Amino acid sequence: MKYLNIILKELKRKITIILIHHGRVKPMRFSFSLPFLLVLIGCWTIFTLWAGFVSGQHIDYWKVKADNKIMKVRMLFFAEQIQKSREMLSQIKENDDHIRTLLAMKSKRMIIENGLGSGGPTPIESSALSTLLSGNMNSISDANIAQQSFDLLEEYKASMKSYSEVVQHISIQREKVKYTPSIWPCRGIITSPFGFRLHPLFRNKFFHTGMDIANVPNTPVFSTADGVVIFAGWQEGYGYVMSVEHGYKYRTVYAHLSKILVRKGQFVSKGQKIARMGNTGRSTGTHLHYEVHYNGRPVNPMKYLNSYLN
Image 1 (cartoon, rainbow, N blue to C red):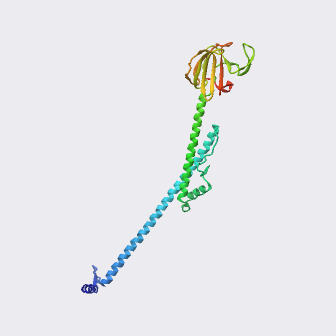
Image 2 (cartoon, helix red, strand yellow):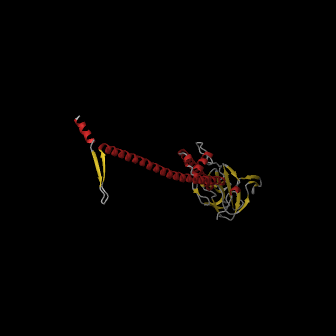
Image 3 (cartoon, helix red, strand yellow):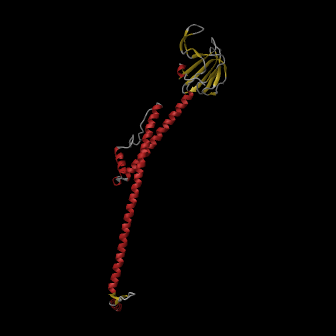
């Protein structure tokens, strides 16, 4: 009770504030009760805290707004890059089809395996991209951007897969060219073609399984494709003869040679000198009897005589 009386007594006291001006103005005196001063201080404190809170909220609002604008600019830039990437992929697809046509490969449009689409964006994706480019960012979601990025990645994977197929096809074709007879085995004049003919010695009609190319003795004879020598020696009727296994079902035969320059089991390259033209075996003059076999059967060598060696 004693302390309560002391507190009440103190609250009844007044506090005087005197403002003295350094001039002729009379001093100003203000008297306040202690309870009024405490209420004034409390109100000022509450106002200050409230003002600080409102100011902080306002700053956060402008900060978020600025961040949103920056994000919109970034998304617009990203959308433009997606569009440019799609245009480049479209050109790659056209080039892919053109190359496949030139290589006689089956043309195929790049179909994404998971069924998301083929041949470019769907109408929904195009609409979403147009919205991005127009700057109306509020109507587009992160899911649209993510979907377009995923589709772009899948198209890139499909493009790389097609590119690998084209490279593999070219590699196979190059190998086939190396191992397919495609040049003249020697220089000279064709004296007897492939097919039925009259035998020059026995005068009976028979099927000639190769072609005869005549020239002067020891004219160089060349391998018409890469391959391995599977026979090199003497054979009745053929004289000195050799045969080369080329792979891809091709084999060639060179007969009536004067000399063989390679041995059995040796690898020979297209255009490599392998023998010299002669008149050995059953022959009426110096010439090369040349055969091309495909899949175990003789075929017309004329189809493979594309060019002479330099």
